[in-house]
Amino acid sequence: MKTAVISGGGSGLGRELAKVYSNEGYHILLLGRTKEKLQSVKEEIAVDGSTASCITLDIACPEDVQKISKEINDKHDVQLLINNAGVGIFGPFLDMPFEEMDKMLSVNFSGTVYLTKALLPAMVEKDSGSILNIISTAGLRGKKHESYYAASKFALRGFAESLQKEFEETGIQIINAYMGGMNTPFWDESEHVQDPSRLRSPREVAEIIYEESKISAEIIIESK
Ligand SMILES: NC(=O)c1ccc[n+]([C@@H]2O[C@H](COP(=O)([O-])OP(=O)(O)OC[C@H]3O[C@@H](n4cnc5c(N)ncnc54)[C@H](OP(=O)(O)O)[C@@H]3O)[C@@H](O)[C@H]2O)c1
Image (cartoon, rainbow, N blue to C red):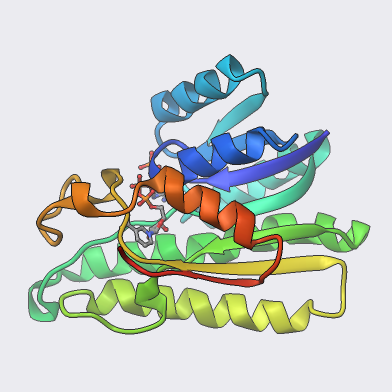
């Protein structure tokens, strides 16, 4: 059975993408750091009559990603990798501690690179598969008090667009999605957005991504 691996699948957009793709015949493999969140999405998918499994993993740790890649490739026919896990820390640049800046770059950029490097070789061997990169409109243009978040997403965009060109003559499809604000737990610890309930729902964004990915390798979903 074809498998879709989704990083950050335990909440927000990752959770909704998991449910959308599980309805399309994929076994869903959820990755994230919090076991309970992954387990609860796995159960929601089972209620809908589809199957999911989960692996607890910090994608920013290259050794851990390498370790689980063998397990994933041995047990699964990975046809879709959704690079969705991400963190956002916002505020004036001069107030931003180095540890927070490092965290954003190591999860949003390096973690995505590690996971891609671990799972792409099996797709290359089959000459088939898709990688969907969840970026952000912060990867298209800088915004006030988002300097380092935007920098991490610009880095991701550079990586993702370059892969698109590298694999364009192959059976591997690289799709890059840039969305504006969504009402997810992403904003739980932040005051950067006044009223997250006014943002798009992650379900709406997941459905748009699913539909548009059939016809375009670049998806832009601006804020409402
Ligand atoms: N919400 C927005 O307004 C918005 C707008 C544009 C783009 N985005 C992007 O959309 C993506 C999904 O975010 P969301 O809004 O759905 O927020 P979210 O609910 O906070 O989801 C992020 C997920 O990433 C996981 N994660 C974080 N660090 C990780 C790590 N080191 N290793 C593995 N998993 C990790 C989190 O789970 P654990 O903490 O359990 O690991 C969480 O489930 C992110 O890339 C974000 O940058 C969000």
